[in-house]
Image (cartoon, rainbow, N blue to C red; front, side, top):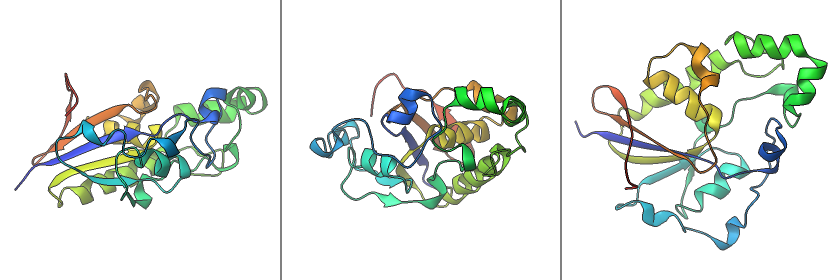
Amino acid sequence: MQAIRLTLICHAGTRAQKRGCFALDEPLQMDWQSAPQSLASRFKRVPRVLCGPEARTRQTATLFSREAEVEEALRDCDLGRWRGVAIEQIQQTEPEALQAWLTDPAAAPHGGESLAQLAERVGLWLQSLERTPGHVLAVTHPFIIRAALVHVMQCPLAQFNMIDVDPLSCTELRFNHIWRLRLQTRET
């Protein structure tokens, strides 16, 4: 079986990120329209490009390809009524709920998706890729990348919030009978 290469790219920055808010479906805070395919040369061969359905992932995907496929499994975590709200505000108005969400992966006090549900969704998506050899570039969200890393490294979900994912960061995973994290010294 041919190996699978999965490159996870975090979407470019948004206004909500800069303000310390949970995400909304908002555009990028960069001139993405003048930079189509500007990052496509990072890879020797053109990979299959997937992206989440949100505007910020679709816009970031254009930096790599004109033909990105929307993949529903790459959608951001559903944070229910906390979408668009500053984390600082939630700390002030719902400190117990925020603490429960940060410490209990099964908790969803916001009325959306728990981290356990998110991790299950991402794990199933990774399993689906195991049957598709080749290179896949997936433009997605920090939560999805964290969930993928926790899955691949077989860490407890309690480690989820210990991972920082910067805008436009690149995480490389490989599958050849097992998933592995691959750290690179140069871009390929």
